[in-house]
Length: 113
Image (cartoon, one colour):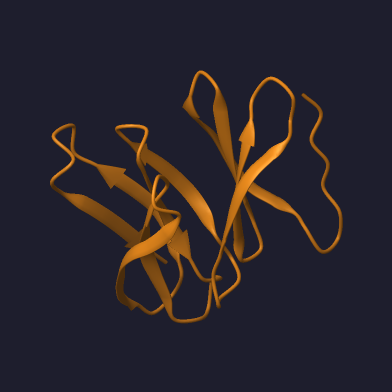
């Protein structure tokens, strides 16, 4: 599988969802691709740039940082099966730099600065 990066579509993070698909964060878009062919299965668009720090929960949810350093940012949760934004956790003023998810998937933490 060959991926590319350009000035307008810099890959900010990439993770395996499961053995058959990967997810890529680029600008304001999450793309889910077939890991064997590289074909885009679906895309989830946001209104804000700077998606990064993808964490996958149970091959169903993608938790990401949304926003760029120096601007108001959020942690967002996407349902990959329903292909939609489930929740936005705002309040980060300096950009979310790190994410952590507890093994039981009930707690998500984001660190800024």
